[in-house]
Length: 249
Image 1 (cartoon, one colour):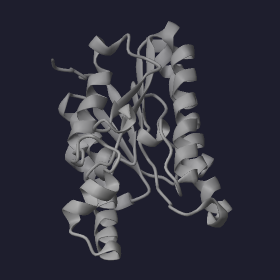
Image 2 (image 1 turned 180 degrees about the horizontal axis):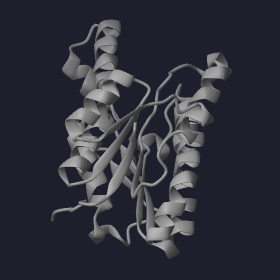
Image 3 (image 1 turned 180 degrees about the vertical axis):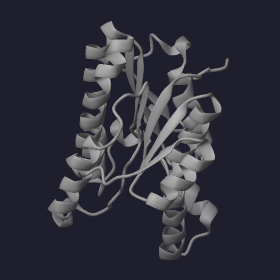
C-alpha cells in the first residue's frame, strides 16, 4: 500500500534529526513539500535541502516563534521533545515547566493555527509523537510522562473536533528508538554499570519490552506516513503503539 502526498504540504517539528528527520524524508519521498522546524538552524537547513523543502529555526517554547511559522499546511507532525531524568524531589521546576511548554503547549498552539486551513479543505492529518510513556509511567521522568499524557488528551480532543471536517488526529507511541539521544544514553549507562552496550539495551532500556531490539527511526516514520494516507481516514483519536510489546504487560 502506497501513500501519495503529491500536492500536500507538511510541517514537522524537531525535523533536523532522529525520528523527525526520518519523518521529513518519508513525507518528502511520498511527494509532500515539507517545512522543517528545529532549534538547530543548521540541521534544519540540511534536512530541508535534502527534502527540497523549507527550513525554520524556532524555539517552540516561545509563542512568538510559533506565530512566525506557516499555518497553511495539510499535515502537522508534532515531534519536538526533550528528556530530563531526576527524582521528583530534585526535579528543577523551571525544567518541568519548559518541557510542558515544548511538548504540550507548542502542539496546542500549532494545532490551533493549522486547523482553519485544514477545515477549509476538509482534509488534514495531525500526528502527535507521543511515547510508550504516554501510556505507561517510569520513575524519575515526571515531566516527560506528564507531557506525553497531556499530549494524548490534546490529540483526542482534536480528533473529536476535527472529525466533521475530515481532519484526523492520532498519537504514535514508540518505545526506545535508535536516535543519537538514545545512543548517548546507552553509552552513559554502559559506563555507569560497567556493562556491554548490548546488555544495556536488553536488560536496562528494554527490560519491560518483549522485543529486545531498538526501534529504527524509519519504522516510526513509516507509521506516520501510513496515518497520512486516505486509507487511514477512519483512524482518529487513536494511540498507536510501536513499543515491542512494552505496553502489553
